[in-house]
Length: 272
Length: 273
Image 1 (cartoon, rainbow over the protein chains, first blue to last red):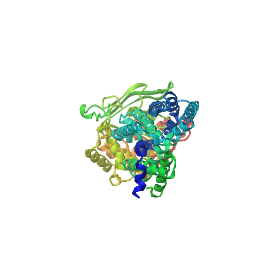
Image 2: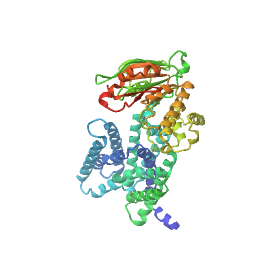
Image 3: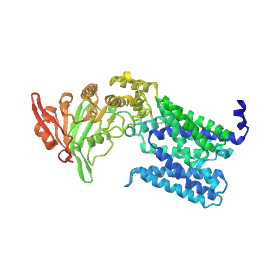
Image 4: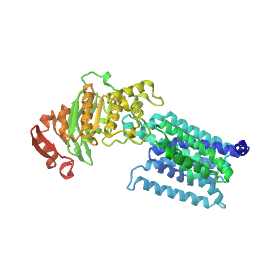
């Protein structure tokens, strides 16, 4: 039994992967709680997909240097989130239609750019589905720093975020900068998506943002409980996901998401 | 900008709580609201009635400081609106997310966010004020209930409690009765009357003409322009009502007076801009 847990831990890459997965899951769950309560799930998915061109350019410019790609992803994510925020309700198309067009187009641009490199298929797979086992010590510090920063911002602005999420019109009458808070949530989403990028990849980042908070929503009566359960189920997904990946020989990103989904299904009968 | 409490204390008691002077709002060159003037002191309540599209919501959002008048001005305790916390506004369709995971007390506590200021957590004293506010609206026993389990009437009361927790001196309610049954309507109106008795200034936009005279000493009949303002018995005359509602209104003479029926149909007639 002890060997079951300790065997993979003798590999440095496994330990780093597990810490990265748990940290990214915790940050995603914290921000994701506000994302699902604000009905911004689709925006989260759009941001995740729209950062691919940035990743692609970073990949082409700095061949083989993974941390560089990280910064490109971060930059693109923040710009994309602000652009999506600005798109807002102007224009003739409905917001979700406009975002759908932009994000599919950006995604295609990303795949197109990466495919111009020779032997791109493996790397493309990594961007789409994550390669958490390849997280270097430098990457790990970056991920931990970003996750810590995101969680800290949420804790500091907890009551403002809650109020602007619960009742934006009322928040405005209290002189709360509601639009700035909306942008803040978008930027926080962008940053967490980038941390999730290494763990589960572009295609599955949405799951880390949405599934654990949904589990929390089912089980909790109040927001602190919801976020607490979300973070716990995110961390558990990272933990068990990596063991599942190790013993079943499964892609780690997929395994993490499968555990998160399993926890959600387990919570379903206990919703209150 | 934030953290400012009500300014009543800073001013002589002669300053009205709400003062609207010749306020007009135009959209695309067409008037939505024109030439509205009135002033309300502490403890005064005003009902605003008129057909759909008459400008009731515009007037309330003007007082709330959510939009600016094209002409004229609005003063809250002598100051321009929109810079203080002494105003509680309950919009017609609450944009509150009722699925939000919070108890009634949590939601009322959010009224304290403005006073607490950035980064500062809420304190036990905030909590006491929120509990006191819940008791004042008669929801003390529901503090631990989840907000999505409240009835329509309880939701309205909770939002009023939140405004009280905010230490609002002025309450603006936009058609608070429309989703309530007759019993809940009267009980909400008597709560508002009690709160006015405790010194709050209250403005309610509503359609229920039959309830106006019973609960409000003053009424403003509006159809873009003010048709009449004053005591309900003097204002809600068949002539004035016809001027406001046109043919969309049916007037039935009864033993107790004229009963006005129907007003929210027929946009062609009723909704004169």
